[in-house]
Length: 345
Ligand code: GTQ
Image (cartoon, rainbow, N blue to C red):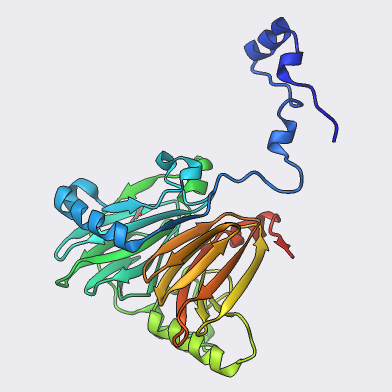
């Protein structure tokens, strides 16, 4: 490859004049912004153990009242991006949120899209766009861009969930902001019941729903049952995997990030090819060993890790006699829409 000229090769007065005029020569930086064959990635393979997070989150519950936090969250920050950036990857943000019995996290809406994967506890709910979405372990609840959402808790134990947002991307776009609102009036009806049966769409007087986000809660009982049915129906099939989709369109549930549930059969090892988007793995049930290049993470229930894009990942169910269930989030809707999505052999 050709050696390109360096900044230092240019006379100082020329460099000074460029700087004065807000001009920059490309050639000293060309290889930096367009590296050969594979992008430079700040995202580092990183794991966060729930046993480390939980006591600190409960401590935050003592130290900071909900009124002083609005959202009581410890952010799972990737050191490769700098912790203060609060990024798991280029486009993904991860946070563990605690809500204590009787607490209320007030209504707001914002431009970034969010989902919550419930980790532990019963009795909490999120009201999204007037729909009260009860939270149980493994449920996925969407709070897409622009929809009002607030969290409440009528139970007796702390509730913890994993927030996944496309905040880093929306912030980078200089398009991130929020608006505070009033407590929502809960409307009757629940999308997860209406859309619970695959292949059957509600069409009152031949009208399809016009809502961009017709289904806001994806109960774990349904996803788990679907995975088990798939595993039984296709015993020869290696990857037992579901994508969370919009039931009206079949598209990914949100515009930027994709969400999936995966089942590893007892003792199974699954190799995922290198793909351009970064990926997050969170154990809903069971335990898995996750290998990302030379790094290996032993993930127990409720643990989370992330892998950079363009990197192969191997998942191994360490349980020989039981299945392991994994929630995944990635940046593939974004990569596909932008035309940069790649799978490498
Ligand atoms: O629960 O609305 O982790 O607005 C970050 C920003 C959670 C939320 C986060 C948020 C929320």
